Image (cartoon, rainbow, N blue to C red; front, side):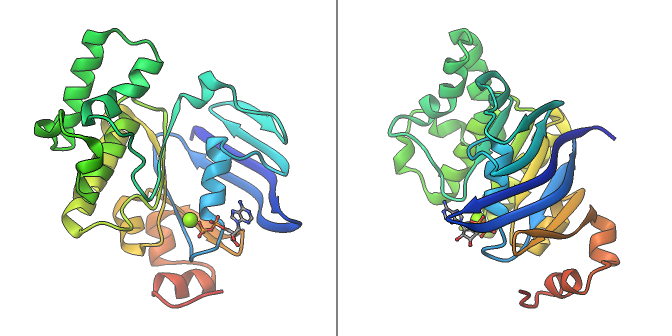
Length: 244
Ligand SMILES: Nc1ncnc2c1ncn2[C@@H]1O[C@H](COP(=O)(O)OP(=O)(O)O)[C@@H](O)[C@H]1O
Ligand SMILES: [Mg+2]
């Protein structure tokens, strides 16, 4: 089993309050890892630590074999192996094409290759006919599909998604789940997806991490977590009950 992310004795403290405390967590490379838990559990905080958007207050985080202790920033060339998608689409005020081309331009990819890659990914997300449209004029579902397209166009080693379908209709949810699976199966991207939707975690996740009050209650392969959870709080959560 190869590991893409590893956390050891990690804490994140905001204003004197520990919002995340993880003794140990390993996220398997090449798999879809789903992080579930109620609102306020610390899921977004965890994703931001993985991405290096936030530094940990204590402990060490490894990404792709490199270890970053507290205060040590992940260098740009390593961060560029990751891509992130947020709950709300974050598109620039330019065309759909320019939005997707942007990360490729940053990496100084030749124009012709950029054009090929952008068209390929537009095809994949079913929006080839929207290339010239202003990104800010898209519907919510289309905009999020473009956000995902922009994230995967560089074939990231790690694709991190924070509740990417929380605001979307079932048709767009299905499309986006299909794209995430494609990035994983066709390009071997390690996926880390935060979701409060149990059904989505079940549909997508190879491995599940259940987070509550900033701590891991239980983690493991999806089939085991959903059929035979060890912890009473995990069973309650997957039955759809309120847990705290
Ligand atoms: N930048 C911040 N400053 C202070 N507190 C924060 C900050 N970000 C998150 N928190 C707190 O950390 C806890 C976990 O938040 P978050 O990671 O967003 O949870 P989730 O994504 O599971 O809903 C919450 O109590 C939240 O208020
Ligand atoms: Mg969140």
